[in-house]
Amino acid sequence: MKLQDLVEQFVENVVAQNEAIFRGDAKTGNKHARKYGAAVDKLLAHGNPGRDALCVLLKHERMDVRVMAAAHLLRYRTAEAKAVLEEAAKGQGLVPFGAQQALKRWEEGTWALDPE
Image (cartoon, rainbow, N blue to C red; front, side):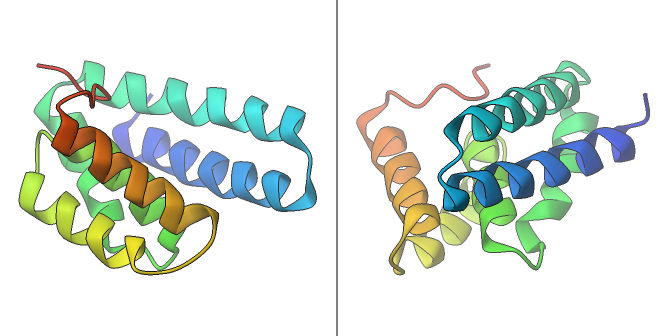
């Protein structure tokens, strides 16, 4: 599968997960979380080219996509990912809360979405 296809799967399932959560449908949300998780795992398995493919999402139009990509890219692109998360964390709601939690785990040293 091409890296771009994996990036598109990531985007589609992050969006679908958030839409399901906002509808109160956790079961469907979890299904989409597993799908974007599988896509990001495949991207990361490609090493830095996979991470670079994911980096384009740091400028995605949707905050939920930017935040999820940034959370996975903290080790690889620390400054850029932190900037995305810090901006999102200023808001209120589920996505800003996720950004706050990612930053907190990073600062605590417990973050592990893309270990070396």
